[in-house]
Image (tube, rainbow, N blue to C red; front, side):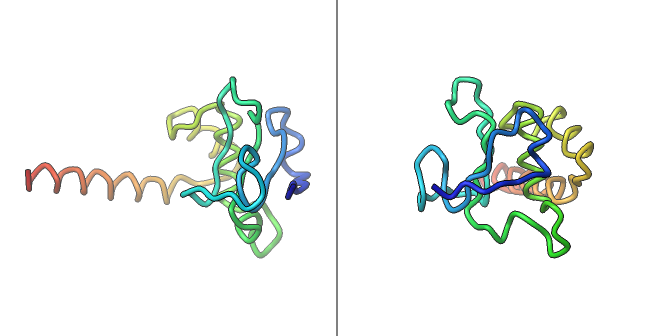
Length: 119
């Protein structure tokens, strides 16, 4: 099982582990749509785990945790799978940014307006 140590996150009691190359729930080589995800459901036996498709997404070139990892840790600390206010606060506390997420929301809002126009 591709479990990787991640000392920077082990200071947080809600962080249980990092699984690389699939999902901890489905095993090595399993696939999912996103680059990574966090298991946040209280009923999930893997609550507290972060799963990443590729090891190259874990750290930046300077060795610090990537923005993606801060994003996923934010989910664990806020105990939410969604991108709500609690999640945003945690990401900022961790030193992450919401720039990419604001752009994503803007694109989605524009797409929704476009769909409304053509229907």
